[in-house]
Amino acid sequence: MELFKLDRRQFTKILILISASLYSGKVFSMTDKDWKEKLRPEEYYVLRKEGTERPNSSVLNNEKREGNYLCVGCDSKIFTSKMKFDSGTGWPSFYDYIPGSLEFKTDFKIVIPRKEYHCSECGGHHGHVFTDGPEPTGLRYCNNGIVLKFIAKV
Image 1 (spheres, rainbow, N blue to C red):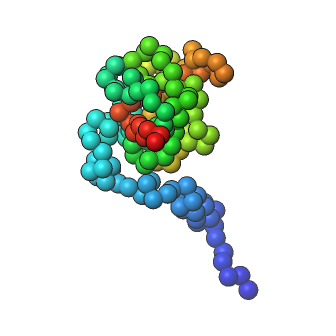
Image 2 (spheres, rainbow, N blue to C red):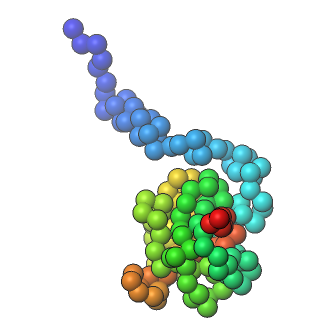
Image 3 (spheres, rainbow, N blue to C red):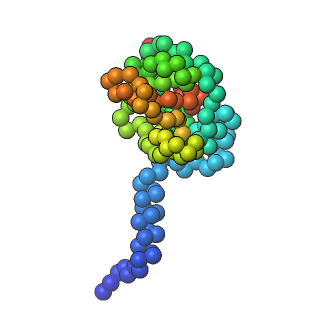
């Protein structure tokens, strides 16, 4: 006796639902309204709408203390102060990131493809990766400072 008989469409729906539930954590269950309540308007614009803050507007550009940089959306640790360098671009820049903290996609907003990165926990937009950084990676993770929270080491 067959307990379950699914057609292809039903099977696909079940797989999608299972995948979505495994992929989504508590932060992903937030609605757009929830995000707007949690974040300041300028944070929301960058983190949830993939905006960009004005260059030289972040206080984190001049941050020199030892510590960690966290995502403002979910408090996930993304960078350490050891990874930070002064790129002269007007945005906080890092030559590497904490493994597993970022996800990547290609951005075509300015026609030329760029590698964009997001927080792997909440999906929030942080910035773009360029190949003009220092050794040992040669990369520059150009981050919007407004979507980072700095926690100094005590």
